[in-house]
Amino acid sequence: MRFIIPFLALIVLGMAVIPAQAQQRGCNSSHEAAVQFLAKTYNEVVISMGLASTGNVLEVLSSDSGSWSILITAPNGRSCLIASGQAWERLPVITVGSDS
Image 1 (cartoon, helix red, strand yellow):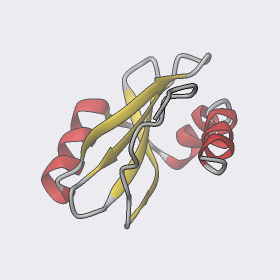
Image 2 (cartoon, rainbow, N blue to C red):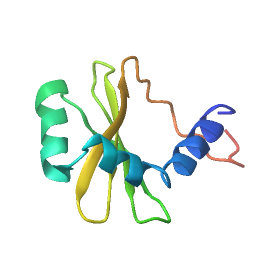
Image 3 (cartoon, helix red, strand yellow):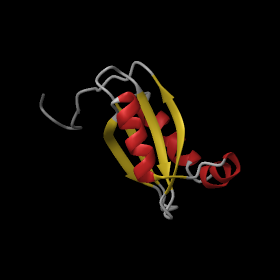
Image 4 (cartoon, rainbow, N blue to C red):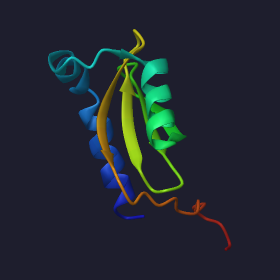
């Protein structure tokens, strides 16, 4: 858990820079096309998402085989794949302050 919060903080901080970089890299597919591609090619589905103060949506997709992708979608609906890899593990949700 100690490592998840700093990792997520880095992603959120990076989201402010992503739009300019995404335009330079030509990340210009529609959200629907990007999600369909990841589903068809890697059997990935959205497992979590968040909204940045910039209006960008960050989505984490993963498959049962462990492949994963991180997708950023701008308010105009254009998406950019910013990271992908293998060996994704879904951890149990731990509630802070719970008795268990």
